[in-house]
Image 1 (spheres, one colour):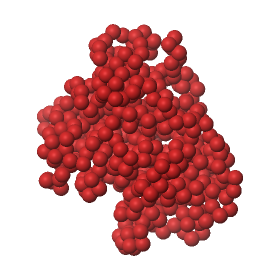
Image 2 (image 1 turned 180 degrees about the vertical axis):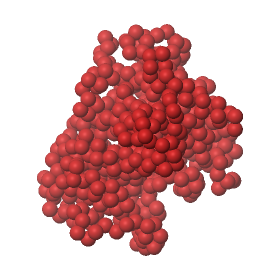
Image 3 (image 1 turned 30 degrees about the vertical axis):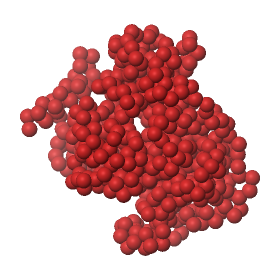
Image 4 (image 1 turned 90 degrees about the vertical axis):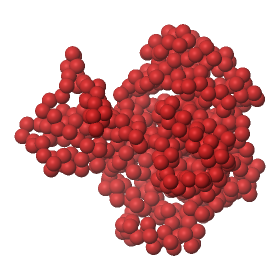
Length: 570
């Protein structure tokens, strides 16, 4: 069923076309085309310093020449472990410029996770901030990287701000030894003087970016995305937001290792001549301050971010009439939270309401959005132009009638190339149907009404969503079970008003291990070495035994129900 053709955006939005013409070329070439149109317009704002499009392009060229001087060849992987700051953006497009592939990872990842990402991608180089040097140094001998580039927040600041940073935040960062085998940012830029024949022509279909997700099995794997995936997203998002104009500002707080942050907040804006207000470290207070100070036009975030915004006294009397779009994704937005948010926006002079979307990393990020003037309670909206959604009996191609719940399938120009090194799971997730389209089997459950509006019902696969990040319980359990003191573990998500869910672990100890506070701390310290901060259990509860299902599996739903009862009893 061709849902988009049956219920096109044009029916609901007036001038939005059913089909779009997509940029043929690389992400770098798309950026260069924008820079040619708007050379003097500001592309990036970072801690008081602005970067125009022509300066952005010049910095990208400098980094591209330096990467070439380091001997990085087309198709090789370069890991970018950076927060939202200019150097991360420069390197992202520079890697693309020389025909290499950007491997995007969370800079707060645990050492073992970083080691996994470097090995899995076979990265030949990496860039990160000075404050994360220690983690890379500890695992470097076990990794394939030849060059480690180190930069600092100070490298992107004006002289005055640089001094202030050195006297405050900079003091807290451990000094990197003078003889450390790293290339510092200044030295790296100087390598560009040797650069020649650095530009590589890449096609739309060529792999360009690796983002990480659990896929359908809940084990971490690299999702290989192409130039076209990102460029198509840039066209789709703006076509579904007719209020966008070049020069409009996006508060880019979602991180660049996340499809939402990289695809929507950065590339979509730069693809269309927008202005990215880079937020390197999110706190509700700084977010609110930047939103008001910069008079942002668009904000994209997860429900937890907006929940935190509602609680801030700093927002009293704030004028948000500048807003043209507020988008929520990454997790379900409850009807009650949407009502509160819409009232909050109205009370602060905004003329728009929050719009919920849906997507997966397998399609970069969003592929479905609520139209600006047609909200249906509980719906995640309509597919973007040229994106198709259908509901089938799970794991089949049997399409279900309107209103009936089944598995959500996606098809369109943003669908990934593959799961890196996982051909079997790629074949399981990407399937070609009789209609000639390749469909993503999301593992998510939902339904569709007769107008083509989609309703997200839940996740078929076990997953915890905490502050917009995906945590896979099976992966956490594997880590805990590997500890000598643990016989068996079970990890669940516990409802939390701020994070939506927080991670809790239940552990049955191995013979001889004592259920003491000391044992708990040992296990928590062990987890810190293996998992990112956001995935850390807030508590570990010891059990003499675990509840079991009829087939002998741990009944995690029983533990979830117990936690809910405890919360209600408080």
